[in-house]
Image (cartoon, helix red, strand yellow):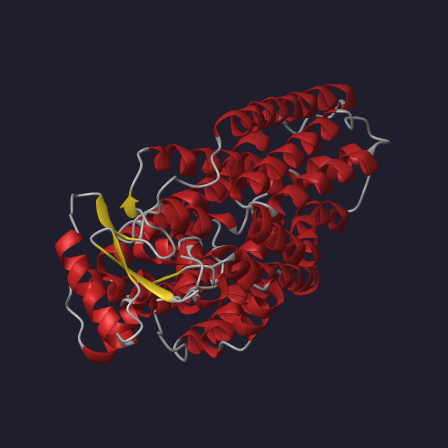
Length: 512
C-alpha cells in the first residue's frame, strides 16, 4: 500500500477502488462501522484513522490516581503562595522588611507566570504531561529546600530565591487540570475531573491560610521565631520531596487508549501538522475566547488580591487576630472547593457552560459587595459567613473558566488555552493587589473592596456577551452520531473522515 491513495478499511479488508467517490466511501465506512461497533459501559470499538487495527476508546481506573497525584503536588505548591502573606506582620519583623516587600512574596507567583507561560505551554505540546509534571515537582522541591536554608534575619534574599523557584514550578502546574481531564477522562466526567485538579490548588491555598499562623505564632523572641519558621519550611520540603519521588515512579504520560472520540481524533493529527505559533494566533482571533480571557482575569485577579491582602484587612479591624485571619482565608477556599466540585458535576450533567459561568460570576459580585460592607461591623462571625459565601462563588469560578475555555477553543491544546486564561489572571492579580493595597493604605478597606466590586461588575456584564460556541461538545456529538450511523449526506461524509485511511500521506489526515 505505497501508492498514497485513500484506502478503506472494511471488516479488516482494504478497498482501493479508485472509482468509488469519497462520499460513497464515507457511507460505506459508516455502514461498516455500524456492523463492527461494539459497546460496553466504558469502551467503544471502531476503526482508527491511519491504523489497520481496531482502536478502542476506554476509561482506565488509573485516571483517578493520576488526577489525585496532580492535585497533591499542586496543593504542595499553592500552599506556599500565601504562607508569607497570611502572617505578613510576623515576616516583616523577622526579616526587617516593609509590608509591601512581603506582599511581593505572593505577587512573585503572578509575575513569574507571565513571561514563562508561553515556553511552558510549548514544552507541554512538544514533550507531554510527564515531562511537565517532573519539572514542576523538581522545581517545587528545590524551592522548598532553599527556603529551609534561609531562616535567618539577614537571608531574606535567599528566601526570595526559594519562593521564586516555587513560583516557577507553578507555571508548570496551574494550567494542567483541563489538559489532564481531557487526556484521561471521558466526555461525561471531564468537568468533574478538572474540578478535582483545581481542588488541589484550592486546598493548598486553604492550608496556606490555616497552617502558617498555627506553626509560626507571633512571639517576640527572634530565635524562637526562627525555630517555628524552620519547622514550617522542613514540613513543606519533606512533603515536596515525597511527591517528586512519586511522580518519578508512577506518573504516566497518557492512557494507552484514548478516553473519548475527540481525543482519538486528536491523536491522529501528525505532529508535523501542529504549529504552536499558529495555535496561539488562532486563539487570539477567537472573539468569544478573548472575552473569556478578559473576564476570567478580572474575577481571578480579584481573588488573588483578596487572598494576598487578607491579613492586612483583618488585622486593621480585628487587631491580634492573625489566627482568625488564617481561618477566614481557610473558609473562603473550603467554600470555593465545594463550589468547584458542585459546578463541575453540574456542568457534566447539563453542559450549560455560559449560563453557569454567568450565574457564578454575578454571585461573586454580590458576595464581594456583602463582604465589603460587613467587614468593619466588628463581628468576626459575620466576616466568616460573608467570606464563605464570597469564596463559594469566586473560587468556584476557577474550573468553570478552564472548562468553558476548552469548549470554546477545541481542538487547540488545553494547556495553551488554560495558560492564556491564567496569564490574564496573573496580570490582573498584580494590578489589583498593588492598587487595592495602596487604596487600603490611603482610604481604608471599604474603598479597597469597592474597587474590586467595580471590576467584578464589569466582568459580569462582559460574560453575558460571550457566545456559547461549544466546539468540544459538537465534536463528541458528531463523532458519536457518526459511529451510530445517525448522520446522512454531507454530515455523514464529514463525520466519517476520521475512518478513512490515507497511507503514506500523513499530511492528508483529516480532523473530524
